[in-house]
Amino acid sequence: MQRSLIAEAPAGERVRLQGFVENIRNKRTMAFLVLRDSTGRIQLTVEKEKYPEVAAAVDQLTIESVITAEGTIVENDYVKLGGREMLPDMIKVESIAEPLPISKDAAIDSRLDYRWIDLRSDKNLLIYQAQTVMVNAMRQFLLDRRFIEIHTPKLIGAASESGSEVFELKYFDRKAYLSQSPQFYKQMAMAAGFDRIFEVGPVFRAEKSYTNKHATEFSGFDIEMSYIDSFRDVMQIEAELLTAALSAVKESCGEKIKELYGLDVVVPTLPFPEMKLQDVYKELEERYGYTVEDSEKNDLTTDAEHLCAKLSMDKFGHEFLFVTDYGPEKRAFYHMRDENGNPLGYDLIWRGTEITTGAQREHRYEQLRKQADEKGLGKDVQFYMEFFRYGCPPHGGFGLGIDRLTMLLLGLSIKETEFLFRGPNRIEP
Image (tube, rainbow, N blue to C red; front, side):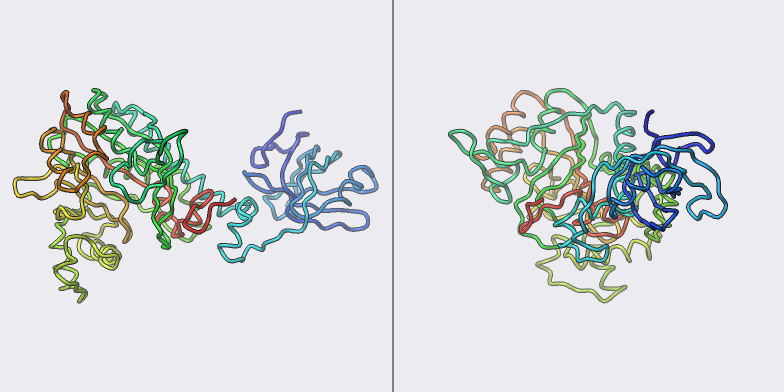
């Protein structure tokens, strides 16, 4: 007999169910179990005198033990779990659980020590169900627009963008690094004539950051596209991509997210609002009295980033805000610049957190070499510079952190939305 999922098991038929025992009431003549799988829960009602072998199996059980049960599904209006129950005539004990080392209300770091137990909840399962829908919707959106998926190496011979924030390792008889971005190889694909690409994969950042949004390893969703006229072409496709993703999440998981997290999945309208960086600071001061030194106004401070959530809603009635016109000091050397030396790029802020830095890239070899030299990179990016010596179309792109998107969607921290969090003080389990 093949396994049936609890949510799909038909009434009136004999089925096989498998899962975790969530609750046990073991009385003299009857036993009542609550069985849980990834689709739901069902009560198992055991007639102990009728099925002594089943009763003997029940006597062994502890909470969170794993069993296989066979029997008939019947309707019963007195049963709270969906008005149906299973009457098992066979129970096989697959695994006996020891007493759990953590409770549901344990501190986050204790829960992470036993992450495989912590994940055994409807709320945590929903994180990855929603994330699956979101990533699949983004992937399908791009496939429908002639993007192709590539997988770039994570072991690299030189730092991705600078000599800092990379993990160094021994690679046979020489040094190598874990990739902090697929950026260089995305651009190599443009030089190869791939036109439009995307990648979903791991990203490594050697940052000693202890915030609710930073991790040393996370899952990135990156795109790059050729023959753009402006970085606004990149902004447009990102806005459309996120709108499609959130539409899919709302349709598939919106009710469950509302039930378990008390949050509405808001599908944004197009186009997303846009402001220049200096105008953002001006409005933050005028509306909310927020001021910073002029020396800090070439980038968004963390507090300014948070206030952008309120500003965008108050000014535009929108959760997303594109911020443009950053100074070159905080932008990567490969961002194209205008005639005044200003980078042609943007940040995208969602719910008070930056989720993207996007830009039109510099594809002209001589100009790119000049900008790399200004940053003092030189030999570190020599292999990357080769990509542009033999013709390269104008192009641009961006990257999104999947875990950060999920974090903002559900109002959690990055520790909770990564399957296994990696930070400066955590590399286990």
